Length: 265
Ligand code: NAI
Ligand code: 15L
Image (cartoon, rainbow, N blue to C red; front, side, top):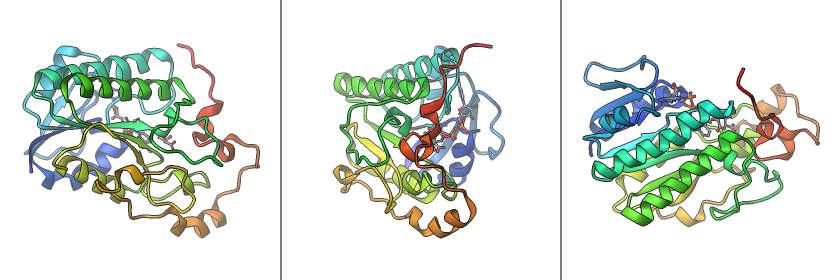
């Protein structure tokens, strides 16, 4: 059992969904976000800070022996918020980890690092990046910082390229990209319980018949159980099938491939 598990982005969609089911993993949970964390219990430690604030991030990481890094910008935005949350923020996190004993990290990367691959293609962990957004580029930066700190200092990180982590698959694309909450939880456990981890790229995806990503390289660490196929009939009955040339049917990153480079307003 961990002594203190830090969960960044604890007020976000995944933070709120997963935190109640992670309480038995650590003696103490430290829940952090830039906004107040709504569902904290009295025994939780709560930290409200901006990932771009190096001193605050240093204090946030002190005393933690595991970090579930969910915090940051999670969709396409203008460059400045992405720079602050996902680039400065991830650098601050790894610097804090380096000076506080290298707590193991699960970094929530994204399928948008490779979103310009077509849904007809099948990918392993070593594929060339094809980001579909500045957001995807920022996650590539995070994956690279994790590799740098592993090579230089032995910092262990699971670089989890999450597909679509929702309670159930919501559309036709998600028949390939869905990552069930149960599968993410079992992956988190496997990552923090493994005797040694290294710095693998892991596809954060369930065992979907229609999936695009091959996790056979980490079969000894973790295997997904759920399968979006269970929901196919419901999706086909309730969600209109996009035209064959629409981005959501052509590209693994779906709609993100169509976004402009957003400018500051
Ligand atoms: P979310 O947007 O609901 O949560 C992110 C949290 O980070 C928010 O509570 C937000 O307040 C916080 N945050 C943003 N900027 C911050 C900053 N500068 N300092 C401190 N906190 C900041 O996102 P969600 O869906 O919970 O995703 C969690 C993580 O997983 C994100 O890093 C996202 O990129 C990644 N991910 C999620 C996927 C999904 O299907 N939900 C798919 C792929 C990746
Ligand atoms: C992501 O990276 C986003 O954080 C999430 O909101 C979804 O858009 C997901 O990817 C997806 O591709 O479905």
